[in-house]
Amino acid sequence: MVTPRANWKGFIKFGEVSCPVALYTAASSSERIAFNTLNRKTGNRVKREFVDSETGDPVERDDQVKGYEIDNGQYIILEPDEVAAAVPESDKTLKIEAYIPCAQIDTTYFDKPYYLAPDKMGTDAFVLLRDGMKKEKVAAIARTVLFRRMRTVLIRAQGKGLIANTLNFDYEVRSSEKAFDEIPELKIEGEMLELAEHIIGTKKGSFDASAFDDRYEAAVAELVKAKIEGRSLPKRKALVASKPSDLLQALRESAGLGVKVVEPKRAAANANKDAARQKPAKPVAKSKAASPPTRRTG
Image (cartoon, rainbow, N blue to C red; front, side, top):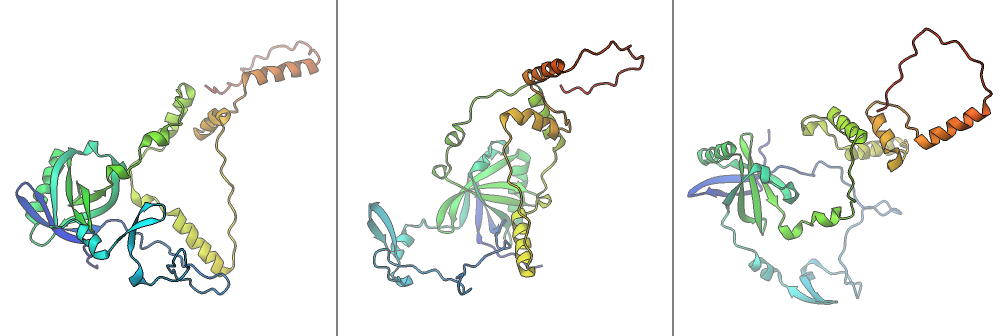
């Protein structure tokens, strides 16, 4: 088994205790299917080139420099050494500033996950921190310079190690108020709510990441295979959103109650039309046999 390469090595400090640790990438997109951009006419790969927006001339790498726009078309040039000097100095220490209850964690702020493990001689202090956090059911908020930026990190105990999530800053997370602003105030109750609760109850389970497959990757892989073999994939039908008038019927079908919903007014109107078309029937003696039970729709 190949030992994973650490992305960062330093110390985690709680109180006056320092423990050497290493960060390892917990999630990677390297296994995803990757595409190359080609020239449709020649089939050759296309390479990216930076050009001057005014002259159209290619700009070599050494002539490329960062700039900050202060006005329309007016920029301040920032030299590489100036940018490097502005980066906070790193002392390679994750300094724990606070402990918060795990129940208070807002996952909206999560950025990237990393595995945090002891490095060389720091096992005793590492286990002490891990088990103490488990017992108190808390997560730790720490700060350090990671990858040239000062980052806030949330640290949680998981299994034999710790999980470190870099956090987005408050100004980077958009307010949910704007996203949910146009949702009307509706009160759903009665049969519709009961059916929704029933459907949700039948799907309850526990989280298992291995049970979820990447359908996009699988579909692209199948598409590539079909192209190689000269096959074409069938086109799928587009989904149609359920109309409010059909919502109850869709819920009943989802719950396994395939009972057709008939609007009272239409049902009454149809019944009157049928009665008008039919001639009066002769009286028929009642059968002693019991009538079949009708299925309740409520």
